[in-house]
Length: 378
Image (cartoon, rainbow, N blue to C red; front, side):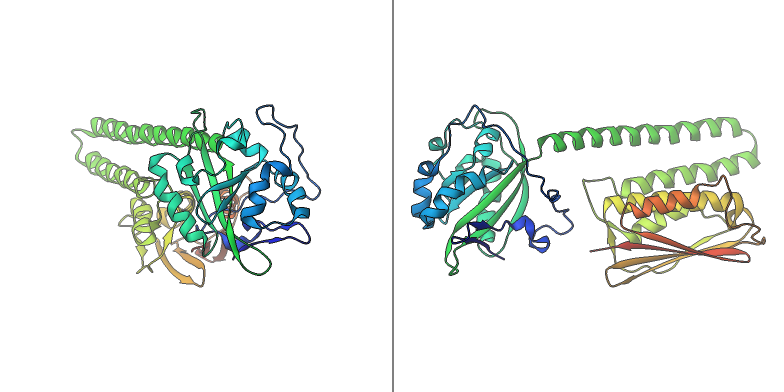
């Protein structure tokens, strides 16, 4: 979908307004501004006043009418993002006031006519070249690192769209870059903290296993029990590594579900995992499933099949854009109550799944329950 400039009405339609225009599946769109929520800013001191005269070359390249030529600077300066108009040959013809400040560029003339690709570091230039080539067909969006003109490190969320006039003539490109440096740094801090927590948890597993082994040494019955516990702790550690190996790495449920469930299965109550379909979940959904199955298994070990020589069967299938996972639990005891006043397990599971655009439906039977987990998949 191209971006159009309506010269008669002075109207610009930005690619962010089209939910289907992104080139990266699964990406969340930037939030729309609230109704009437115009944000005003004082002109930054680092940039001289922009006027229609400062974009005279733009009018020639883009064949913009004089009426729109007067309106364009004020219109683009309303954006807090870095907005650029780029010719078909890749030369920068305009950057708005806030963009100049964000990039620490003193004057528009410093970059006018330069190749946009030359403003990026060497490692990002192939990405920029491909973005321009692909944007001629449809909007492109990507994240990349680009320091400012004065060397300050910055990360940008960039969209590039084709610009056409009312007659469909290709004039060039519109690029909008949002400074996401703070969010990027915050995520790096969170990732480091999460990695440290996982490392400590892994060490805790090893420490608990060692303590149990020392306590059971010399007692054959205890040693057998401790061996089973060690195997379960090791399996839990393996399950964690499936979806934390790389950032946002998708996880195949044919690997994930057995790894999450096997640590809780035992001879008196095996957890039977049926043949699973080929489907992947993202890291957030994998985290949610780990928490959900952990909570359900713990609950079963206290009140259900895992504590009473029962059975648990888990199966999954894909219906449209939904992954359906069924947990069927049967206990040797009669179910006396479906919930407890002080119980928080089901409420926690529902909150976890809702946060991942999923849901849980539980149907109780005389000696167990049937649970259906729904998650959206690409």
